[in-house]
Every structure is written in C-alpha cells, then in structure tokens.
Image (cartoon, rainbow, N blue to C red; front, top):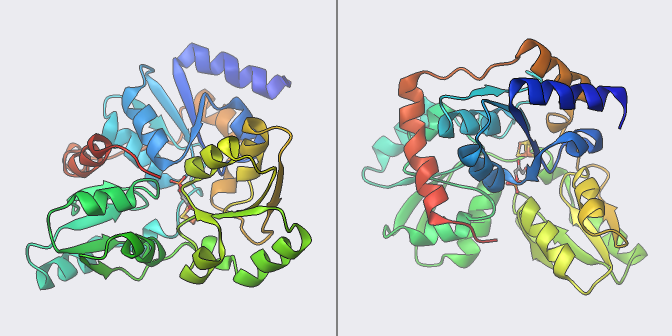
Length: 303
Ligand code: 13P
Ligand code: SF4
C-alpha cells in the first residue's frame, strides 16, 4: 500500500466513512473502494450503509442517489467535474411538457438522471433491471427517460407496450462501432463479445450478450470461455481482471468516459480531509426523488 492509500484508509476510519466505487473508476480508485458495483448495486449499498459519510467515486447522479437514499448522511463527490452528460440531457421543463401531452402515462427514468428529473418520475430503473421494471408496470404506454438506446433495448423484450423515447444517449457508448468489435473478433475469434445496453442497436445485434456492468462481471466469472471482448468503458477491465484472474479481456479503445475518470486518489484524500464536495439537496427534492428510487429497489434486479 502506498502512503496516499494509507492516508485515505486512516481518514476513512477517522471520519467513519465508506468509499463506494463504480466499475468505471480508475484502477487505483477501485483498489481503495470498500464496495465496487453498478448503479443498482451501489444504490443498494448506499441505502444500507451504517457509516456517517459516503464518498461516492462515480458521477453526480450516483452521489445524488446516495444522498436521496441516505439523507442524514454526508455524501461527498470527490471531483466536481465528475458529471454524466447523458443525465444532463433530460431536464424538468421539457419532461413536464411531454407528461402534459401524455396524461396518465407513467415515467420510467434511468437512474442516470438528476434528482429533479427523478422528482417527476414514477419509477427508476438501471441498466440491470430496466426490462423487469418496465414489464412490472400494468400500463400499456410508458415514457422512458433519458437513454434512447436503453429504451430500444427494453423494447426488444417488451412487445406489448408503447414506449415513448427521450432523445438522450451516452457519448461513450455510442462511440463503440460494429467495425471495432468486428476487427477485435477477427483478431480473437474465440472471444465472446459482451456489451452494455447503452450501445447502439447495431452493436447490441453484433454482440453475444448485453448486460449492465455487474452483469458483465457475473457472466465472465461463470462462463467456461477464457477470452472476452468488452464493449463498455475500458476501466471495467481492471475489475474483470480482479474477479476473473487468468482470463483475457480486449477493450475498445474509444470507449472511455472522461467524466468517470476525473476522480483521482488525491481527490479522494482531499474529499475526506476537507469534507468536499458535499451533495446538497433540499428536503423537498429528496422527498420527491426518493419514492421512484425506493420502488426500483423494492422491485429487485434482473440482468
Ligand atoms: P451500470 O449501471 O451498468 O453500471 O451503468 C452505469 C453507467 O453509467 C453506464 O454508462
Ligand atoms: Fe454517463 Fe455514459 Fe459516462 Fe455512464 S459512461 S457515466 S452514461 S457518460
């Protein structure tokens, strides 16, 4: 353990803090995280933790979700630039206008949304449970916010509902092209191709499987295969190497999320030292955003 890692460990004990890390974090940040996971797993961890402080090594909406689920805890996002551009593509006023055009139609929001948009939402979902959540609703028509590609992925499995899509997308996952995967498969013909459902429909068609980040890890660990082409943020490969040592992974070079990579070990140390940057949400915003997140957690997960 290097001196910076030891300092983080000491500060963490001093402040009674827990460090949650998303699977896309830098390798060294993954190494000092108490829990690693996908958006769903980290939401559950955030709701269960006994610590006074949560340091959220992920993007803004994830830290907000932790605050919404644990309002009495101090939630810290170690770097202010760690924001999700897809979440910023959905805003309250245009969503209200869409709801007004479709009275009584429930809104399913991907967790990659602001607390304010969650406040306009009936139930949240993650990439791990989106299909299950949409299927669980009795309604024949739903509004799905903000990821068009995840919404199109849900449509593959839910044929009996009309799904109104929002024009949002993940800049990292739409960078992954079929040609990238095809040339990797030519180089590694025995490898299985695993992608995230935020990828485009053509990429999902080409892949062997589409899963959330945690779903990809579970698949790799239980698969008899030894080689995998990974169609999601390339930092995932650090987590995969940890959980499936000895297996081989080939990433798509363009699949980097600069926002997820903003957080460094120095930022984590400084966040604990200076108690920065505190996620501040009004009691009203928390109350409105909590119900759709809790409904999602109650509905459980499916990959
Ligand atoms: P997961 O929930 O699959 O970890 O995905 C979160 C995310 O931001 C994907 O881009
Ligand atoms: Fe947002 Fe995409 Fe980055 Fe995930 S990978 S945090 S969806 S920009």
